[in-house]
Amino acid sequence: MSGPLVGRLAIIGAGLIGSSVARAAKEKGLAGTVVVSDRDAAVRARVLELGFADEVPETGAQAAEGADIIVVCVPVGASGAVAAEIAPALKPGAIVSDVGSVKGAVVEQMAPHIPAHAHLVPAHPVAGTEFSGPDAGFATLFENRWCIVTPTEGADSEAVAKLEGLWRGMGANVETMSPQHHDLVLAITSHVPHLIAYNIVGTAEHLEHTLTSEVIKFSAGGFRDFTRIAASDPTMWRDVFLYNREAVLEMLGRFTEDLSALQRAIRYGDGDALFEHFTRTRAIRRSIIEQGQETAAPDFGRRVVKDGTAG
Amino acid sequence: MSGPLVGRLAIIGAGLIGSSVARAAKEKGLAGTVVVSDRDAAVRARVLELGFADEVPETGAQAAEGADIIVVCVPVGASGAVAAEIAPALKPGAIVSDVGSVKGAVVEQMAPHIPAHAHLVPAHPVAGTEFSGPDAGFATLFENRWCIVTPTEGADSEAVAKLEGLWRGMGANVETMSPQHHDLVLAITSHVPHLIAYNIVGTAEHLEHTLTSEVIKFSAGGFRDFTRIAASDPTMWRDVFLYNREAVLEMLGRFTEDLSALQRAIRYGDGDALFEHFTRTRAIRRSIIEQGQETAAPDFGRRVVKDGTAG
Image 1 (spheres, one colour):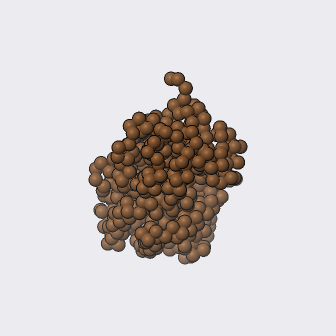
Image 2 (cartoon, chains in turn brown, yellow):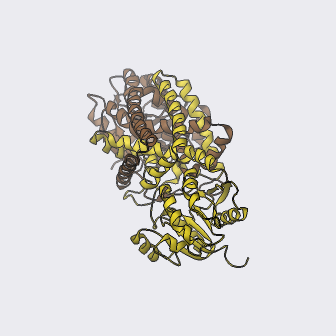
Image 3 (cartoon, chains in turn cyan, blue):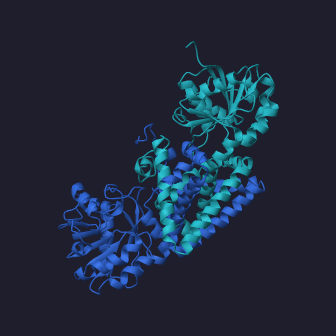
């Protein structure tokens, strides 16, 4: 191989995902130059300190200038504005991509701004943690995770292949589907799970004060599992729900119908229905473990030590 | 100290919890003799192989004979039958306890069978994993976890203190409350979380076949977290919902009311309401971590390797 996969790689937005892309690209030598920008001056200063970028310009347009691939890593609701900002700076053949958790709305927002001489290839790495910001990222975040690429109709196949190569280079497996299908699948695999996690933590918080403190105390009974994803970035998740409304409401409707059926089984003491339901759900976890998307270790292999630091 | 805390400790039911109590008592020298019984002959044979019991009699009555403390570790719905079986074998001063996730119903079922010369002291260690059976237990399961003791009115204080000593000896912190209050607190910290986890995994399973396989593939987006507790023992959880119906329906009602409010915010595009909700929920996780009930490591410190074995 002669030289890195990408000459100049620009990352706009240095949060958990953006800083992980920069770190992975740098560590694996995927780009000649890694340029990282963020609209927050404090974040830019931190990126300089952390040292995972070759250049840290002030604006997205400066970052996009001369870049071969530009990965926009901002909350979904901000992607249109970033596309408008960088559009005049895009060189011929430049590939503009993103990492948003919603794809239909991102295409709607970004596509109108991308000039004919550049390519829009949206993507979504299905990876993350509950932490946010430039310190939270790490180079191995995408290893053995899926990255879903959602090219629009008539997308340039070379541009799509190049972007896929970048994600494979970072250790991800790549899958391709339409933006609409992506949004439906993610509604049930990610968006509704986050919503109900945020919701039950909220329900616990609304309880009488003494009860809330007991919830915290006895959270090892199951509740604490939900608090992890309910600690995710509020801006990002607000935008996910605002911009994937239709699919989320559809899947949430199915969820509440099913919950009503379980509630009814509890009310009328239908133990057989409960047992049957609780038995079938075990198989899904087994499949997830077999496909290398989850650990088989009991309790996630979680280790809790008394002072709350990681075990 | 002269000799172990308990002379003869009987454990009836050698599942995850029962086998962990036996292992912890043996490893920490808390009992002169550890007796473990199980109604399943195959489980008894396995207990003998695993070697964490000094005696493995066939029946609960045989195990209870001469025991100082008898810990009943069976699904909540079976606790009445076990109490009836062991009652004639109880020696004067014997302490009968349990580990059930519901306490009001356990007291109702067990208390009528316990003779006046013995003591019933129900308890619930808030600890566990998604695995079941005698192989799943381990001696450190209760370390730094809470054990809730729920003495009934007029309980013998020495008997309560002795049982609390046993749990402290296994590394647990002990809290005391009424059976009714326990059932309300556990409904929100454990029972409703399990129900909604079972429910969303069920919703995913009800989808069209191709969608279900995509849910498995892209589960790292959040869904996989729920599959852990939805892989818990179906018999145990059926009984929890049958025997804590009132508190579960009450807390489930609050959960669905709150979910309706979030759903409405999504439908009408109320980003401020979503953002505000998603911000408040972060604080609860921080408190849980500070109290040593959860790891601060990102993603539970989970490590997934390709072949699905523990990292």
